[in-house]
Image (spheres, helix red, strand yellow):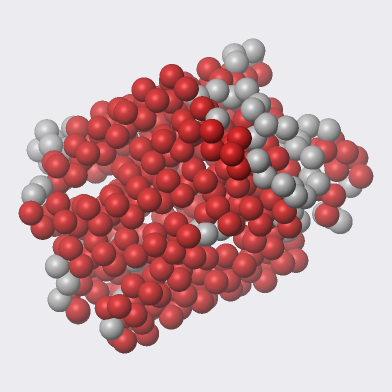
Length: 390
């Protein structure tokens, strides 16, 4: 959508505010299913929940061009429906990782899985301009939506929610995994009050909001920034939008490897999580402040790449912490914190459109930097990797 919306705005005569509303409408649905996705994944397993999410959002993607031609309100509803499907994905993945991955491999495994999302973004940004030039903007939604249905068929055959339900691994491998992961028994009762009143949980929630404000602005508005500010055409915007995601895929896996190595060498998990997330906050904050000082388009692209690259260290900080403090409830906890993160996406994406209608990009970056700095303070004061819940 971040590439297609440039052509869609021309076809439908949208201003920056309308573009912001369209891009934020995805988060309306995404916000609704975070917690319920985590609850259901912890109870019935992540395989079914993630499978449902992918087939749902794939169908919604395919229907997007029809919705856009039917009217602005119909398009917003279709984008919200797509968000409903994607909203269950991260809680379901977190629930599965807690049941599949030993603690000593947690950072790099989560970083590897999340780098798949970066690869998806890279693929979409790289191929969308060519598809639009050859077949018009609706082709983007038809092709990528159809690919999701193919993935769903493979997922049904290959995936398992936990080692006890996987018939393709050996008994020895199953025993090895189960010796150092959370009990795969389905969660029946969730201690809501204890979760929400726990200080480290509250730190995760606040910091997830601070992190996602900047991340989602870059995710949704980067091609528009390249087009409006740097003067790139659609092909150039697509190409240069890919580069930060490549950087993220590399640094996320490097950060995961480094975090696990530090733990192996005896550094406390709490200290490792704080180091990784501090990099994930202060790195983007620094490079976003440099965007107003660079004098060339390539310099701005380098700042974007460095900002997103440093952001990816968060996979070994904030995003790994749910499994540290509440392994049996990691799905629902991710759902809770990501609800705050998605709220930041809704507000930040829409606010960016409004700010650009009346102000400048410097104001957009200043808000993101302020939240990164606030998150750094909260994280270092209140986060921990000590298990808080059985």
